[in-house]
Length: 208
Image (tube, rainbow, N blue to C red; front, side, top):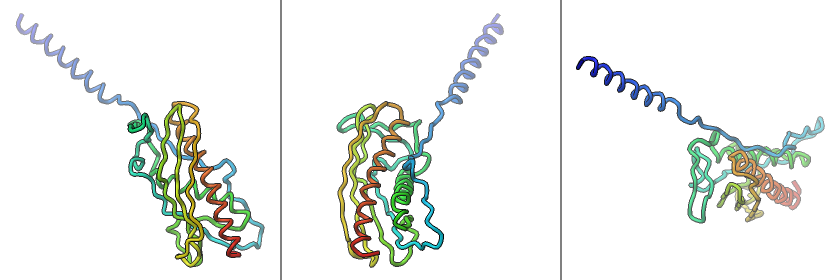
């Protein structure tokens, strides 16, 4: 009789352990996201024989520390942030923002025979555009706020020909993280347009 009871207790505990192990192996899978550039951001083909007149280097790009994480960070209150454990960036957010800006500007400035490259791709006689994003707050189902500062540094590598502070606000039409990422991409498109306008002005003033 005692052996029978012991056997049943043993089977019971084996079953409990199996359930716990199964539960540990079925955690929620992570989802990964990436920003998108302008729909028209396909490199424009320059006419044969035309030479590139100007090179513009974008960067470095700085973002707030609270955003510099693998997880997507959203705002849930004036002083409260939400970190999405299972909704993550496919890579570095800082690098993704830089990539999107370069792709957007490449499309916008290509007609002026301007080539846009990362700031680490050094070449003499180039303009440089360092940029700092001071605020990028997204409230799902609410609004997005983007604030950024950027400069246009002349070909001599020293003279600041322009300095701009830009602010954007956009509605976030949904609560899913795919909507959040789309809203950020749209705001970066607007920022790209302002940077492009400043670059064109700087080139026009200098004559090349």
